[in-house]
Image (cartoon, rainbow, N blue to C red):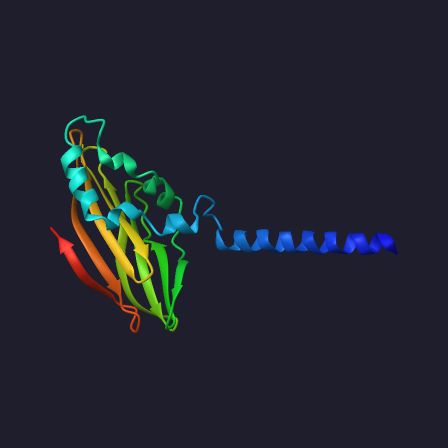
Length: 188
């Protein structure tokens, strides 16, 4: 009888641990490399000073280019996604945000949409990440984003052999009542 008392808590903890592992796996089906913080995007994008710094320091073959502050490889991260929607945030008033990769067979072109739902009905969408590269050309373009609560920032980068430029910074507010994306500020 004593052995059953000691086995019971161990048995319960094994079941609980397995349940947690299965829950995490269900949330991350085929998205092994993604964590919630990675799905929020690149925080540096929200800082206007970062844009100025990129445009100042990323000309020529400078080793001081501030683009190196971006630690995640978003192309690699998003190229592994399929075209299923991933819930990344549930906000107040039944507003839910999801990411979805637009279906495309071109490995040099990736588009990720940020979708907003209100009461389980899709109300708005915006391209929040984009990567374009023509292997026959020396240019590549990438759009990065950062999402925090009801705010979204996007920033476009152009990469060539000589430099990297940052442009077209935008800040959006997610309307708490409707779930729509509203442009607050932009620089072009």
